[in-house]
Amino acid sequence: MSLTQQQLAYPYGEAEFSGLIKQFPSDFKVSEQLGFSPAGAGEHLFLFIRKTGITTQQLITQLAEQLAIAPRLIGYSGLKDKQAVTEQWISVHLPGCREIPAITDSGQIQVLSADWHDKKLRVGTHRSNRFDIVIRQFSGDYSRLPQRMGQISQSGFANYFGEQRFGVQQDNVEQALRVLNNRHKNKRLSRHKKSLFLSALRSELYNQILSSRIAQGHWLQPLAGDAFMLAGTQSVFWVELSDEICQRYSAVDLHSAVSLYGAGESRLQDQALAIEDDILQANAALRDTLLQEKLKRSCRANRAVAHHLSYVTLPEKKEIHLQVELDRGVYLTSLLQHFMNSSIS
Image (cartoon, rainbow, N blue to C red; front, side, top):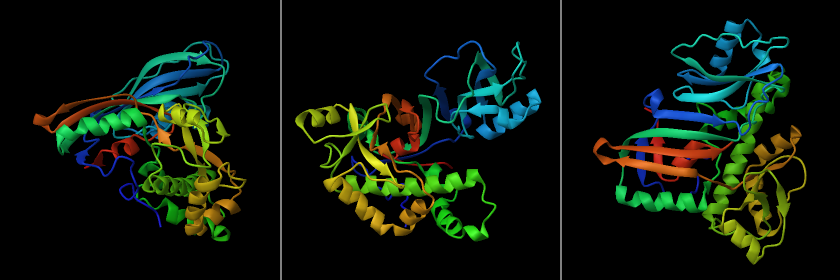
């Protein structure tokens, strides 16, 4: 059975607040941080674009039409929200072009900068995303908010996959099991759809494993048998627990690694491995489906860091204005669930 975001365990207790997000596009601003500068030469035009009220795919379609090229020649690093004002990098392959083509700004698209680069922009290339959001109809005891925000700032937050990973109707897991286990009836399953389904299955298992760890009290200290990930990297290693490792964990210099399930041996041992095995046994259908698709096992950090977290409360307006920078692949909705039940009206 799939767990909703509200059913997951959270390290600092239940959410004590509620509020509404994305009431207007300007309430939800996101700026993609590439982490490097374009080379200044090459066949790929890198555009930093502000878009409002459209999806990334709609942005790509509009650019392709303006430039009279195939959409496949356009690259992006991350998908950005529709009901928002977002800034993101796009690459356009223009071999032989020496001048930056004119792109018409509109109420939905504005080009902020442009430069040449020698490689196409690939999914997952950017370093982080900066968020500037307004939470409306915020309800709860404002005096208790600093303590919760302090806990998040000091020790991070559970790195759950957000509800976006599970589809608009939150039924991607159920669809995945039905479709992938009846492949002979679904021969036309696209690569994109298959990838979405497999991601949903792995994300569900990851969320359940992490939730089980937190529910058992394993958060402020690492667990016997843990593998570890260096903060800000995908580097995974195993080492015996020691005072030094525990100190580095408390300093958020490294995190415990939680499996993204697939074929291959686990990096975990002892109690950490036992928790994962319990979840896998309880979700045999998800486990077996991933194995038959021959995905390789990998890892994801159990914690995420809320970089530069700040907020301003406006009780008279029942609003909170929040700013934070999150590493690539970290969900803002997961951060919000640590202190509030959020919804979009």
